[in-house]
Image 1 (cartoon, rainbow, N blue to C red):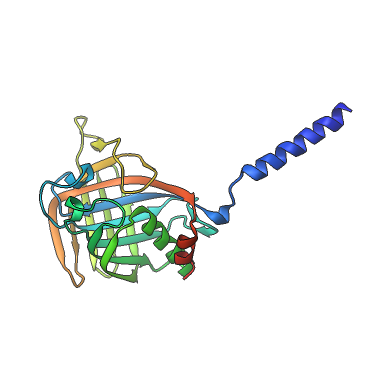
Image 2: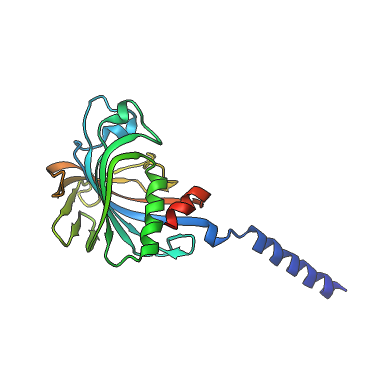
Length: 235
């Protein structure tokens, strides 16, 4: 009798565990290592609310998804994407979801499949829910290297590059880190590792900067795939 009860309890526990496990096809969970550089002085004032100064925010943001990252059943391990952009100066008037922005060029890595590109697009829409006045996509080969003191990212075509010299702390060995600060609409992050950036973009809207704001950060975004997001991902 005791053995029968034990087997029944084990079966019930297994059923509860299955019921509590989210359906992978209906969820996303990514962690993205980031090399980012913009036109602001070190550090971005707009992260602390509407900026005191009208300004554009021209930037190169490079993301590499850690192993195990996924969007539904699409594996995003080690996938990379590059976003060159101008956010404009609307932090004064409309910070948050739906903020109008100027333009963005999204470069997918040549090694990404069509499904991976659609999934990455959906994640970018979730973490950066802004409205672009002009938006386009392209493909290229992306290189990404993040070290203790420097970080580098390049597009093989030469269209854009980023070099970061990290702002070391008093120990002269590790970067200065800003913590307890939200990175866009991600769920969490491991802190902004501050750096001085040299970066450029040679597209239709060219820009080039030296010794401006930069940082590396790893952020996490996870949740259920909403029906409208699923439509975006299946186009």
